[in-house]
Image (cartoon, rainbow, N blue to C red; front, side):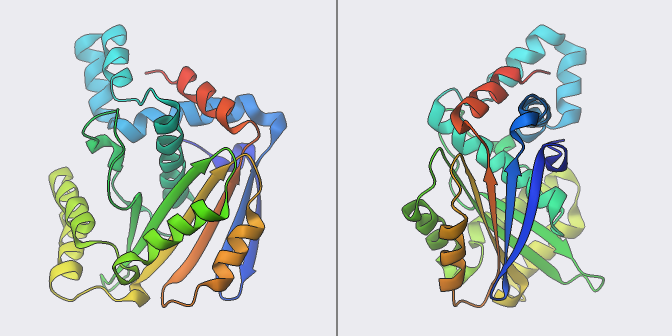
Length: 252
């Protein structure tokens, strides 16, 4: 799902000790991109097993209505949600942090954004030491220094660490889903051992029509904190039309 490699070109750069990924949607593969992303969106809002249950119990028409009720309708919220969805897929598919939750499944209402860290990804070493990726996603037709600064400020909050509230939320959801090993590791790192900055990596995910690579590189170059950094720039032509087309193509 999402399958960035099917519709994007990749460039990998170093800015000091940090990483900048330039991901560019191929304009000749726009239809494929929309299809790939639209097929991935339902998974972000409803667990596949739950959606399959809805299809079996309610039939396709009512299951589609159930899914539609989860999706945002305003242009601003759709932009923000899709940025978060794409960021989460990037974390799980393109980084070493392949464990965590799909946060949007627990959204209170489709008319409001969720608070807290946009995405948290996790990895456990062979000795069960926890590594955490703290991500902020920004989606704009034209990305600016001010928006990048907002994301940078959010990543640096709480000493660069994920907030205890966000970690507890994820741990509780993982426990409910049966992933007790990762849940216990998160609780342990939050309440007992105390997470260290060396265990945390930051991801700033930019989704826009323009190319903010130089702005991102400047932000990376100015960072002097203790956490490892990864910035990802996803550039898609006709950003707003792309978002509109993706949500129009979503189906069960």
